[in-house]
Image (cartoon, rainbow, N blue to C red):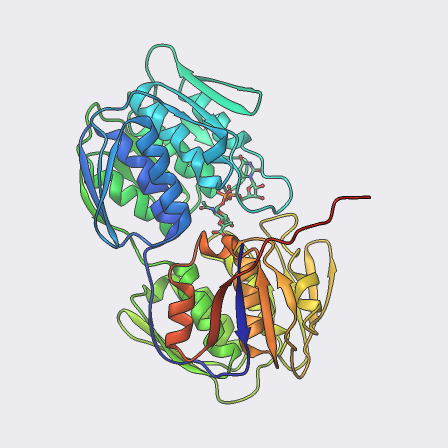
Length: 428
Ligand code: EPU
């Protein structure tokens, strides 16, 4: 058991460099299965989601070795066990990308229902609809999703009922190896969808239109290993931008694609923050008070749901009343109770949170309820008077590399400490 102990009140200043995108790398690692050969993936973030996905690959027979801290070599020549068991899948949602990749590679897969952050119901009906349209038979039995292709995957025309990042990626992974043309309509457009398509094309696939809502895939028989560099993490970058703004700091966020940051940049400017864009970096500085604003999260290019908790944490200190509407998930305000213990004034009604700005937050013991909720608590803690202790930081370490070192280098007073297991006395 570990926790973060944060002494708030320091303005963040200096430079921070952003790592590879979690939500891209978690699709690219399973995609390496689509070629029998060797891939080198660069700009890999040092996060636990990556370690678990690599462990899954090894358990299938792939050989995995790090060439340096952020470069991994994966050889998928020999795959003998197209299965992802519960004890690994339970840690993260993206484990289900092995379904699409294994269907494409082996024509069969058995993957445990995935874990990941809890935002209410997280159905996978659109993934299954897509696999079935390509000719796979899919069943769910005792928590295992089993897929099998009798003859060959066949290209198909698939219209997704909802815009889903996961379904777009998963079906793309299988369709690159299907015979003929697959058209995905109402596809998700996130930067990581484009990154995966670029990786697949580097492996010899023929994917066009990624980044728009219609993706056309001409299936190919053979794919080859590739050398590929993951894009920078939009959400990690946004988190440091908001942390800089919330603490009244001045930070240069390096190794970003400013175009990916536009919806976040725009909202920061609306709240009175100065944002200056360069080719591959963004400077965020706040000299005046924060003003309230409205936010509605939407699929890309809208304001990302994965930035909603962090932005809300900052708005707790803005002058006036802000309204935050969650447009993607049913229940992504669980962290609000934790912020309330730090003195935030937030009323939640279903998918809408009304935030009444307060002068200051105060340190308190809190719990990360999921990955971005944890990031939001870190931001709140950095601004707060006094000490905040954040528990369940494994959520945060799933998606933020070297988070203590990075915040420390910006002047934050943060420590990661071991907490003794609490012995609960047996009932008399
Ligand atoms: N949905 C369905 N049916 C499906 C799939 C999704 O109804 O078959 C619904 C969901 O219930 C949700 C909406 O569609 O209301 C969007 O879900 P989506 O499938 O796009 O989400 P996801 O693929 O499960 C990814 C990210 C999340 C991010 C969402 C939205 C990964 C590994 N996860 O999840 O990231 O919130 O897209 O952008 O890429 C995070 O990084 O903190 C995180 C949670």
